[in-house]
Image (cartoon, rainbow, N blue to C red; front, side, top):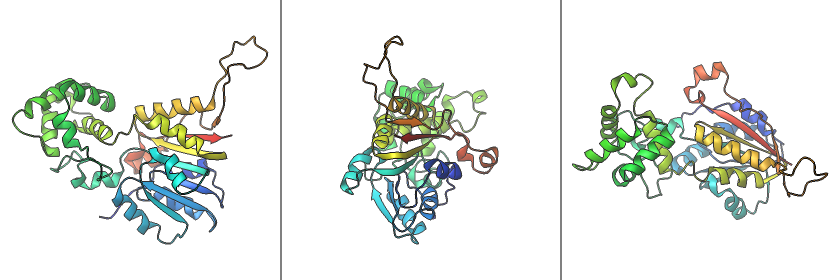
Length: 309
């Protein structure tokens, strides 16, 4: 398939990275390489970009999109493993890292991946097809309470318990194997008067996708690890699309900045607080109204930037 993908807040990310032409940069969510292409345009032949993605189809598309550039290293892995990836490449520190979290528009468009609630496709939702856990496993094997909790926590779905109950009732008769079956169960679980705010399956599908790809649990540590991999004055730019993602990033930034907890009347610090750098964005950057009208994916996007000291 052709990977059509408009990078979110492109100029804001490029500005935020403060690119040095001979630097080493990491795009931890390479995707269709929209952000990466702009980074590479600003690098000299001595600069380097490391593109990481757990989706092999994305890597294939990125290689085609970036074929004019010779200074790219492609890595099929998860950005959560940033430290081991750089260690394997014998790279100590880098000048900048970009993470564009969540599912991409081309993954949604490729219906047979099962990310979309439109059409009838196999329940999959794996970003990395080599992993074992699929959406079908989550829907058919998780206990009712587990399903209800993850749909509520990751999807912020008020009817999570009713949806989980109806999923469990349905699967007593037969295994749920398609996106259409799941959508129909969700639609029957939500009263019609509450189905006016977007597609009724949107929040549940988001929750299951986050669970399948383990997008939230390791994020705080991933952010801290990324910061530790930066050179002095190196920048970390992270785009989030969900409140739980944004909270994890914000908390990691605050903790990395460090804060003295000593009583104010002490003449000097004794708590041992250590700062790894500073938060560039006191409040997250959001897309312009023009971009939001042009690119629906940017509507919920938030960009936070950290600089290593």
